[in-house]
Image 1 (cartoon, rainbow, N blue to C red):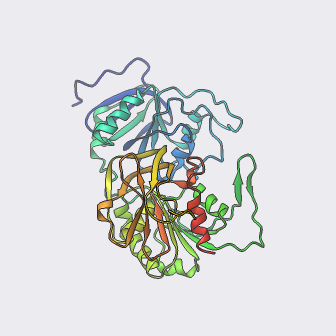
Image 2: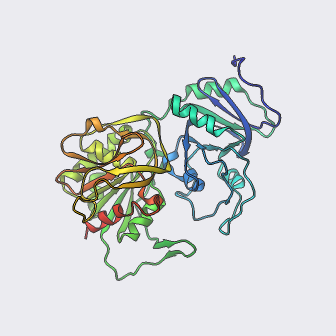
Image 3: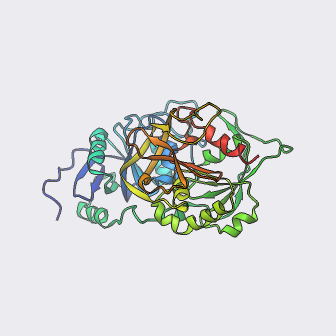
Length: 397
């Protein structure tokens, strides 16, 4: 039976969040109707809600936005990281208002309806965020019914029965299923994509898609590469058949140890052949696993656009110290991390979080291979981290 301590639905409540511990949070539903079960996380970014909702790395998650005014600039067809949203839903403080932005093409609440995603407004998101920080990211069900009718016992059962993200390979669910050439040119705000110079010779990068964001490919092209995207389970033979000058390992959702069961052996073989490799987020974790390290589930994860990361190793520029000691303001989205305590001697730790000291970057000794936990393509800083794309492409020329 439902816990009698559950607060009664307030007047006008049409949305609900039921946590696996039996807690119930009421609110006003918006977007699609129905229910979805997943892990509740929080994101501290003040902008980019449409990019967050469409980022494949958020598969299996319900996002709590700490910034109160979500939806105020509407939506458009450019600020998406994938064809469809991957976050299951979102929780916000204030009701979605009419959009005010010259790029708007559709209000956020209507976009949520069209994309089949559930929203919950009127929630004390600061209190929910503190709860996640203190108790960890919970499993929960988010639901919306315009009539405010909910079977709380059934929703609680679904929340408790959901297995959670640990041990789950979600990359296989969000990856593309065909090899394709990224044929878009260089993108600029207000101008769209400009065609590339067909006479220009560019090094060929094969990108392994574990749930890649489009902006990563834009930045590889901007840095001077030609990109071919392949599915997550592409074999070593098929990667080599494309004759890559370098291989990129993309971001993605789920437990890296699960994805690594099929991806890490391929990456290890690429390392043995001394093919240049660059990994971001899940791709960074795949590189670490291939080189002998391990990954761990984080207590609350890192998600936001203001995370300070310090360069602690490697040579990142032409200065006497190679850029070590410099701090970058980064964008992050990960619930798993490379375990610094398991790094073998062949892995150099290059970046660390100044929030909690967790690993944020590695390079492989004697190899042209490196990875970062954060998202340099997300324009944090706003240009603090583009050097990583340039470094990778330059080493291919």
